[in-house]
Length: 120
Length: 110
Image (cartoon, rainbow over all chains, first blue to last red):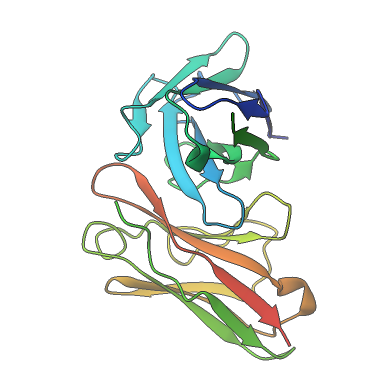
């Protein structure tokens, strides 16, 4: 059974760097073609894809945010970490961690999400 | 990468069929057969309904079906039920090797 869970601060100040951790179980990021990514959703607004990392350390980033994002993995801990620099109030959102199966291009498992508020 | 365009809202009576459109560009929807659809109930994480334009994951009702024509993908819900009231999002793989989501559609069961 695949599960994912996001953790990190609920409140960050403008200009600070956000660090979110996705802890997962039921699969390994050493398996060929498997990916873990991040998607966010501002309150009352649409989903926005942010980043994805694959077992071979291939990384993909949103073109509009790539200068602010870094995604890394720790296969020994079954974790994926997303950092976002220079946070702004418009970055207030629920951040979801997602799983992508080998050779598939959809997100089949989602974490419950974690709400991050950016405010001074 | 601009968001895919969806109608803000669609409504229907129980038992009816409704269709939600998702319009993209030559760099995403029309280029690839990698459109997926997600259902999101309030306060919950999205759930995968359709992938690769037409395929349903195991456990998803066959009342949900997907299609595509040119740069527009569609999700049809047949035999509308009260539990189908939710937000729906399309998503597509893009020529930049990234992903783009739609603007979202709120489905109301009258």
